[in-house]
Length: 326
Ligand SMILES: Nc1ncnc2c1ncn2[C@@H]1O[C@H](COP(=O)(O)OP(=O)(O)OP(=O)(O)O)[C@@H](O)[C@H]1O
Picture 1: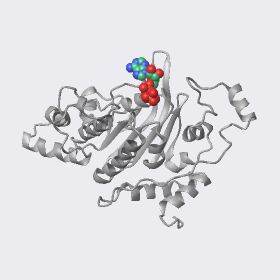
Picture 2: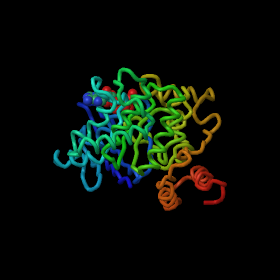
Picture 3: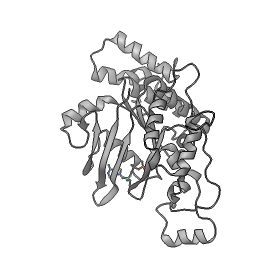
Picture 4: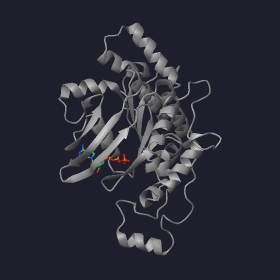
């Protein structure tokens, strides 16, 4: 089973620019979480901080007893082996074919024999649907295939935590749907804790168990997907509905006067229909059920009293396929 990631009071700056401050959340073991946020709000910086590639000034990230922020580099390096990282562009070596790219972490970090490496690599290639393409160079395949190859490489060391940076970037809507299904299928197969950074609304509404959002240097919210999908928070509503009216502007946040003018003209984010909640994706038939579903159910019921009524209603419908009371 995947392991829990606990983020406590994390603050990251570059010089005088604070990217975000006092971020606190827990990624529940084996569940899929999505971090949303407009461009430039520090989602990638957040992923890199979790894995210890960037060092926040304050706070802790606890993973299996190791603090990825404050522990000695040797311990952080060891703990990093629990992670699989999928970067935006696949981050493949251009001169190596897909097989060698995917085999790279095994050759670098383990003493496995070539026959064992071949078995593992081909298994992962099969999982991401790339059988037959293993001899190709990254430049000879499509962006979607490169992403899937990046995901296969993230999987070879049997990670307990998988971090995906914008798995949809550069993909058409159909390929994005395939990637969404692949992420859910992977979770069913390996039960790893997953964090996906994206601004894609289809992924956000169909893939995660939990959602969070970064805006204005803060974590606006983090919790069960239904909490954000039914949220009244203007920035969350605006983002999930993809509308111009609201606190998020083109290059920066809008000023108060502009937001007030929009409200006056009935364009505010409080206006219009609340977002429709679509069902979460299920694993492809034939795969095992996601073990995280039962754990999440128990976890959500334990926090029931803290949830707003709108989120509870959405959860009740989602927890039981027939819409019976949970
Ligand atoms: N190594 C760095 N040095 C200085 N500033 C940086 C560095 N890395 C990121 N930043 C800054 O931190 C901020 C957040 O960047 P980040 O890439 O995390 O945003 P993001 O939310 O992932 O954006 P997008 O959705 O567009 O990918 C940006 O202002 C960026 O310029």
